[in-house]
Image 1 (tube, helix red, strand yellow):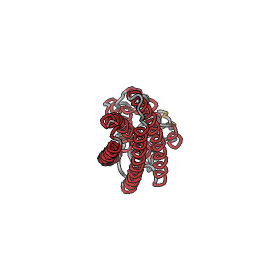
Image 2: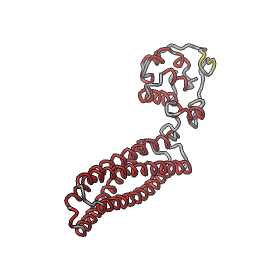
Image 3: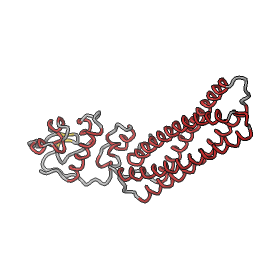
Image 4: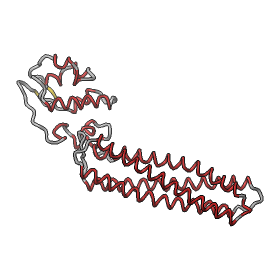
Length: 297
């Protein structure tokens, strides 16, 4: 008896997930699948022992064991399998198992590589994701202010007896204006990003994870290009502020002031790039799992 197309598909998924999830033993994965069409294979000890069951030649050579009792009860003769129409037909107890987290085999199979969330669910998820990212950004800004205070302390130590209140005001005002501009820029970028993601999912309900990855990769590259242009404009604006300040305060040692900004810029650019890159990576990872597996975190 040859395995049906449905069984071949499930065996293929099993093989992939044995590679992707080596911590899940083959026995546990097989237990999740109901294969009444192949009672002799399900009960065969050689299948459980073989890490590549779908391609294992021993499976085809496994002798029949008529009347063997498997998880679905005693089976004899030539059983048939109804054609599944939804993931729950393929994986018993899927609704419960999907709640068990990322280690659940049923969660892996839940979407079978297809979009499994609705528009309202996606919108709510993106809103929550945005709130979390804004909270992280605020924490990042607070740390920037703390770092700036330490820089000003070192500047004061290097210029004993000098009144650095004007320089301090310049630094603090410049940082506030840059953070405000960054907040506005990221908010607009995020709004456009969410609209594009919702539109992609709506227009491509049968999209595969690979197609989604391609879409997100292009979006990421476009955002990075836009961000670098924004940073360049901010740099020009900052240079103009420094020029105005040094002209108005000729005794402020312009080179020292510029050096102070340059040190902050070098450290700050690395920080913001690292922060936004990690934030984007986490966003893509969690969004992908939500759209295709229904896992919210």
